Image 1 (spheres, rainbow, N blue to C red):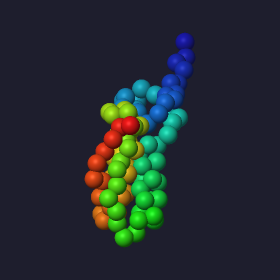
Image 2 (cartoon, one colour; image 1 turned 90 degrees about the vertical axis):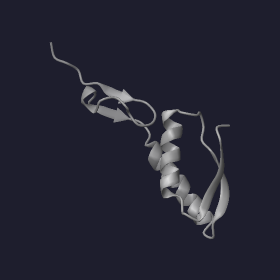
Image 3 (spheres, rainbow, N blue to C red; image 1 turned 60 degrees about the horizontal axis):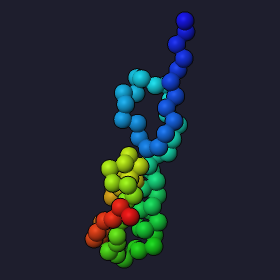
Image 4 (cartoon, helix red, strand yellow; image 1 turned 180 degrees about the horizontal axis):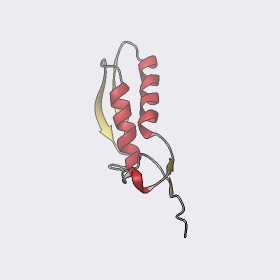
Length: 85
């Protein structure tokens, strides 16, 4: 009996062993965070202090977006506090 390929469909990054599925269909949350940071960088070229609203604490989407956001945010923009609401 032939084995059907497994295609993972879901949000965020896949934490399972990539050899267990043939493809992943979903959002790149780190890229979304980087895109958000790019907008902040344009809006506040001289720097700013900001609040980061992360979403559900510990969720793959929130973790990925926050990681991408922090990586791409200009050094003169300071995240002074966080909220998950």
